Image (cartoon, rainbow, N blue to C red; front, side, top):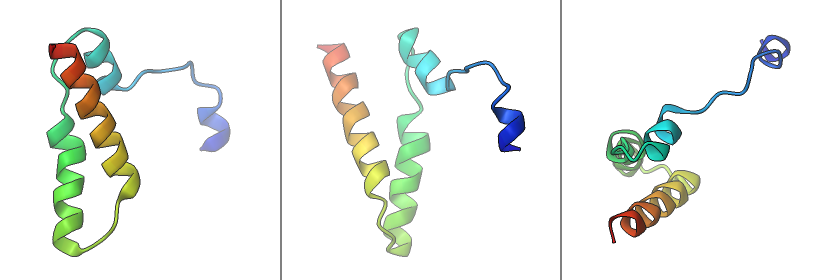
Length: 64
């Protein structure tokens, strides 16, 4: 699968496309769901926490 995926053209995630087009992001539906579930089952998800915080910060700058 790795060998096959190396032949694909570069793609953008749907969240990046939404951001570039100024649309609302599914931040709470994606990252927020992981954060909520991780707290329920007591599992650390530090990378998701950082990504969520950085995206929230970026979105606040957009509104101002």
